[in-house]
Structures are given as C-alpha cells and as structure tokens.
Length: 97
Image 1 (cartoon, rainbow, N blue to C red):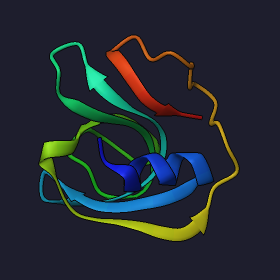
Image 2 (image 1 turned 45 degrees about the horizontal axis):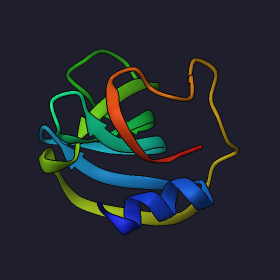
Image 3 (image 1 turned 120 degrees about the vertical axis):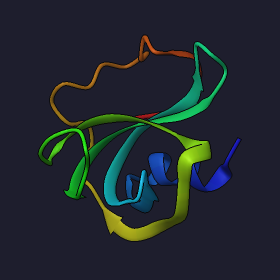
Image 4 (image 1 turned 90 degrees about the vertical axis):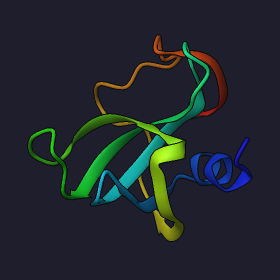
C-alpha cells in the first residue's frame, strides 16, 4: 500500500502524475486492489491530457503504470458527482472519501 496516495485521499489533496505518457492532474477518490489484484486509484481527472477523450472525466488508474507521482498541497472540495462509495471494480479498498 502506498501511504502517500492514502494520505492524499484522506486530506483531499490533488495528485499529479504521468500515465500512458500523459500528464494527469487528479482528485483521488479511492485507492485499493482491483478484482485482478492490481493496485488502482479511482480519480477524477481535472487537468492534463488523455487518450480517452476530453477532460474532466473519471478514470481508474493502475498504480504500476504511474510515474512521477506528486502529492500537491492543493485541496479539492470532496466527492464529485458520479462517484459511488464501494467502487465495484475494486475487490479491496484501502482508502476512500
């Protein structure tokens, strides 16, 4: 488990990282293990770029594909519309809003 990711969720801190060669700015909502036992973050991408359409939007990020992870000092307001606690794509949740 990555303590920095869990801390970011607990304190509602924005994450910045590279994923699939794109810079992402993300509000993390949940962190845990997927049904296939990969560490994942459910997050709302607010800035940056993506291959999957326009931003902002929801994503499920595999932690092993994240590089240059930075927990910023910028806070976000809390749960975004469209988020449901107990993410069905996670078998185990370590940290959640």
